[in-house]
Image (cartoon, rainbow, N blue to C red; front, side, top):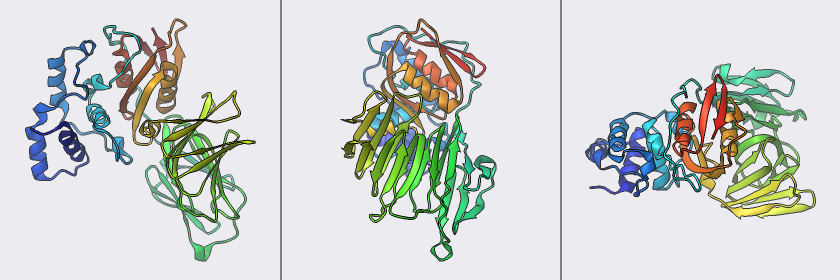
Length: 384
């Protein structure tokens, strides 16, 4: 008998193709002993023995490798379990969805058809001279040269600026801009080595090469930053009237125009947030929030893994309203969402792969019995 932690660790290695022959034998020998993340089975999830059986039958199926596009360090076993169990539609029964104040029996809508696929690596680059390059249609390799900086598509989903000091020319004042549409995501490595992941419906403006006393970029939508350290040139992100200043750190910024607040979450290092005469300093594990009707920042502790789950290939919600959840689904699956006028505000929590068909995500939400969906082309109607 092996522990839950050992089983999940072995399974994660197996999914990534890193298991040794002996480890794979050990994993196979204990598959039938797998238990759910929650030791207390909820009757509303369905027949316990039947679901155990169906999930065990599917555990051997491979997960799309992009589900693990990013570090999984720091995932607790509960979260890894949710990841592993998201491999099949049956496993979505283990999404740990919790709806406040209801014990209704879930009803799964049969009219949800698996026709809307998840987003992918899609973006276009607008050069300083106005030229536009559709990155997902471009071949890997060199795309252009600006100010002595070579711009290349390193692989699907990554744009790289490489500065050659020997060939460096005068810096251009015009900015480049990378934009992801709804249903798209992309990563860019700036000329200073800073890495930026862009979520769907987002854009980043930046110079092909940094010069002067600071490195400044402009963000709309959502982005995760791993800033290259350079004490002589602080890095600044301008977003919705807020300046975020760092020297070298990891942080996430969510600033969609259809959201009521700008949220900056710090994972590593230190960050200063400025909004006119108001300022706030963040420590790792903290989030600075600026609501549209306020001028000062609200700082609180958060689960940083949830805040950057999108970067690592997941939806992760913690007591979120159905309205907030459907905004994320709308952006990632490039669909329109309409709410029935009778819909009641309900909060949900759980984790599921972003690389599942939208029908499977919606079915998981329906397990609460408090919300239902109707799919009409690329339009999703949310109903009580």
